[in-house]
Length: 321
Image 1 (cartoon, rainbow, N blue to C red):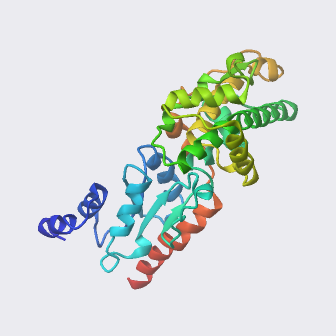
Image 2: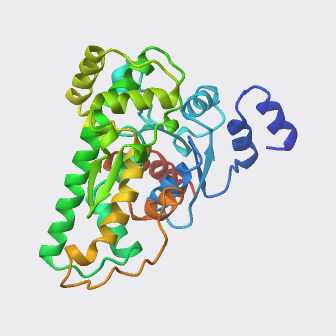
Image 3: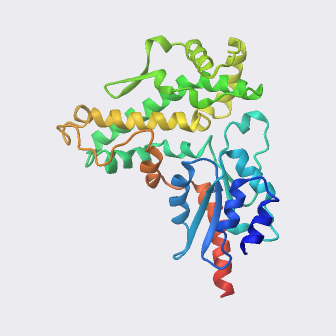
C-alpha cells in the first residue's frame, strides 16, 4: 500500500488510530495488530500477547484514546482488505453489565472479564511476585506467607466494602448520563494504613460521607439515600465487589498495600526479615502498570481469545508457505 492509498483510505475514517494503523500495516511481515484504549494498556497487553505468539512474530498495539475510540475504529474497519484474525480490539467492560449496554461481543473484539484490565492485577498471586521480585520480601516460611496472604485479602475486602457505596453513586451518575471525571475521585482521600492494615479516615467513616465527598470531587449531585442503597444492593448482587470496583481505584489499593506490607515486614516476618527489605525497583501509582504487568498471569478468557485469533492467523500463514 503506497502513501496515496494510505491517505485516501484514512479520509474515509474519522479515527487517528485507524490512520496510524494504515501507516503501520505491512502485508507480508510477521506482525499482528491490536487496538487498545489508553496510554497504559500496551504495557499490560503487549507482554501477555507476545507470550502467546509463535517465535518470530511481533504485535503492534495502537492506542485509540478510550473505549469509544476503539469501537469506532472497529466499526470503520474494512474487513475485505484485512484478515480479521490478524487485527484485534481490546476494551474494558466498565459498568456495561448495569447500564444495559451491548457488550459488543465479536470474535476479534476482547472485552475484559471485570471492570477493566487493571482489575487483573489485584490478586494475591500478583502480590506475591511483586513483594518477592520488586520489594525484596523473599524466602518466607509458611507461617509468614499465610500471615501476608491473610493481611492482603482482609485489606482487599475492607477496601472493596468501603468503595461499594461510591461505586453505587457512580452507577447512578452513569445511568443519568452525567459527564463526570472518575479520576477526580481519589481513594487516598478515604483510607489510611496502620501497621499494614487498611482503615478509613475518621472523616470518612460513613458511606454518606464518602459519597458526599465523591460528589464534591466530580461536581455532580448526590442521589438520595434510598436510591444509593438500591443501586448498591444491585451492584453487590451482580458480583460488584469482586468484579466491578473501578480498576484504577483497585490499582491504587494494590500499590499502597504492597508498600505497606513491605514496610511492616519485620513485624510480620521477624524470622526471615529482621529489617525492612531492600527495594529492587521503586513502586508507585505512576509506574505501577509498567512494573506489575510483567508479573500478571494471563486471564483464561484472554488466552483463549489470542489463540482463536492471532494463533489461528499465524498457523494459516505457516500452512500457506
